[in-house]
Image (spheres, rainbow, N blue to C red):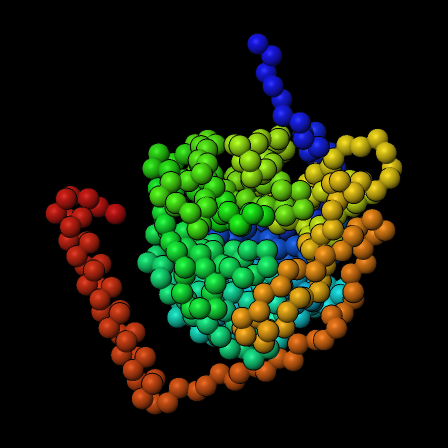
Length: 458
């Protein structure tokens, strides 16, 4: 019996091989990352990545024009402004000169990057803003998709905070998670935020209420879950089952969440899945840490909801980032571009996804008006926190899109000075540290005694 093949204009998407001259070679891969972070963040002209250094806390910024071998050692300018490793990073969608970083040191910081990139290294004093409020490691940063100067962060203190980056103030703090938060994700207009983490729960709601509207168990495994919002308001999640099978699921967050609408096991592997949803084409891309393939699917919202298209096969990727749509080559019918971080090659490798067409004319059926990389907010920070919502601004790519070099209004940062601790506060902090050391020493002695009784040496 002949097998029916579903028709799709994206069925023949392919990824042309990239010559090594097109790679960014000589990168220093960080050994530390959050399960919800992918080491790399891309703007329309640059990428930033967690940079491997002896002391940690470093970030490199590379222009797309700087292909080939990157400078070595001290010749490579970096941001070295955190005391501990950087776990996540993200470019401001409305001002590509601003980069947010999250670190194990408990801070999220904002950096201003010149159009030409880094010409010299930056230190902690060069941060235009330091966001202090989390009590433990900051694991993720996520800019609001329509409101200016709003940033969401999540932390090992099991909270999510919404920040006014100009004033350096947390406007909202959300509690609820009982364990590490792996990932945070806004919906398209920023009216909702979804998170998931080690407690296996998916939570979502309007974060301005300081509460999550609903929560439910997403995946049975505790490792590396992710969430995305789809065009129709449904939620797409990736994670693991009890047998370590990697899977994806689709949920109706305002319907029956006791079971998913779709649940598909992909394979058995330990690598965390890295999903990306393209609102313009409704294509779901799924890469995985340590995988050499990137699967892609089409979300229809009908029948089976998700249909497989094809997959890219290449070198293993430890992480990566997707270039905004306005940074893709429309004349080549490039609908997406992944910057894959390959640790064995010490390289960042561009992977373009191309729709083959014979005509040289603009293909409006695969390039609808896009909001991805437009660079203009729909709301001010004040309007957003007053309860307003707005769709993202969109542009046509038919005649080529030129992003504004500068936003209409540059943010005015009010940096908060670090407050010196009083003698009483210093004494309390010292006593707390001493108590912690005493506790750990006692635990270590117990462990050594147990090992000795079991006749185990080390």
